[in-house]
Length: 293
Figure 1 (cartoon, rainbow, N blue to C red):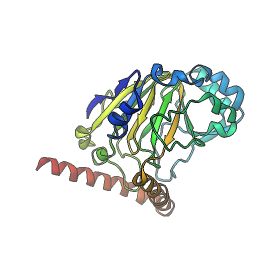
Figure 2: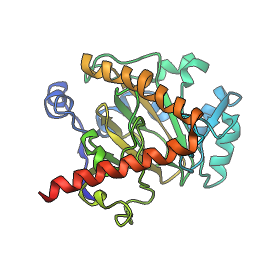
Figure 3: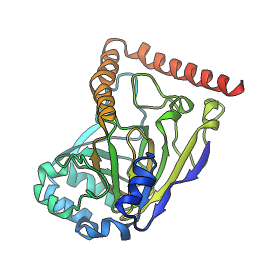
Figure 4: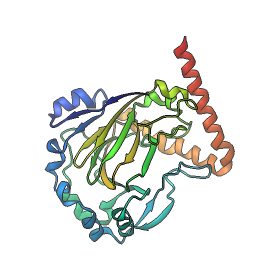
């Protein structure tokens, strides 16, 4: 795989951001000094604080296993209280994570802790900020967000290794049809990728960085991302709707694509599981054959 670093800035004007990143749909990391330190959440949000205000709330937790033949989209592996989960993370490495947790629904007062980056984008879904939490060693496997929104992803406690690819890289990373998932594994990708089993990966072009406390990653709609928690930590994602074409694409993904995939999982799980991977290989091979011409 061909890897470059994601751009980093300490500060950036709205005009520069729009010209250099938003309109070209290019990722960038804005450091804590340039954005998140303006927010009370930067110093206020800790494990103990969250446990105190929402520790009794049930949350879905997800392990590091890839989705199997019978796994519906976004199906949790277990449900425990947020406080129980926090205790597990604080004791040591735990390969469990939480995603799409709308903590604001349970603790509306947290809204006061967040400063929205309205100067950089419009269309923020202010009722749906999402918390992503992981223990050291947990993994969010390669995927892109099904609603196709732009994401401002701010890391709080802990470090996270990030790998991004443009959506047009889909054939090179074996995107499975009717899903937002890759058939290839990217676990420990920075050490080794299985380019023998997935030869098209050698031609994929990715971007990487390590997010630390206060770093905010701007991830344009449709970007593939794989995230590995180097330490136990959490991040908040703020979602901003794309333009009309992006909104329609997101609607197609949520209603059409996800609906068909879940239906096929119910009707013929084993056949569909293998068929998606077969088609992913065929598309990757076709892309490689075009490169050879």
